[in-house]
Image (cartoon, rainbow, N blue to C red; front, side, top):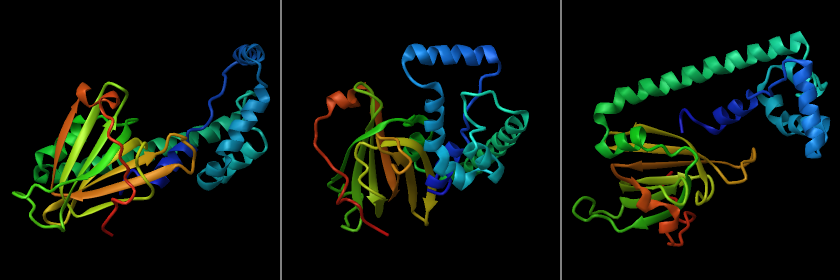
Length: 253
């Protein structure tokens, strides 16, 4: 991954700062709802900040980190104007950075568009796999008419949004398939495509496991010559019972 990396995603989470109630009346309504719901309004806000603190300490301006440590960034209170101003500046910084990253990737993609095989274009433009789960990964026999060398492999990856709708990507001419940890049951967050040498292309996915914790991030990259894309209701999770695993399939450097 060159654009949607673990670091970028962590920074995005860090700059997803807590929202505040705008008036005392709104705040009081939230307090009453917390009482009815049976949880401590202040304690819940402190827990949220403690959960976010490691990322905040790593990515936020020092001023905001100090506000958070001093409980000046708790959603259970109306913030001081200086705190709001600092948060607005931080949010604007991240918005500008995110737009810049999106533009960089769009420019890179457009620069290689006329070199991409049709399947890679479909994978990038017509497969909306954000939040889809990887339900199967397996190696298939090579198409001997296309790839008659053992150095090239064929890898199938299946994803499903729910029990009904899914995707099947069959990558051929694969020379590299790497990931941090087993990708089975991981959730797809972002994807990207790039050229890799003269005859190959690289497809990457930023993933997370179902826990969604800060240490759950995973990255996958596959270098291939061509890809066949299938999608539809017939590829949903309920229509697939093949037991598979991705560990042990990783190869390449």
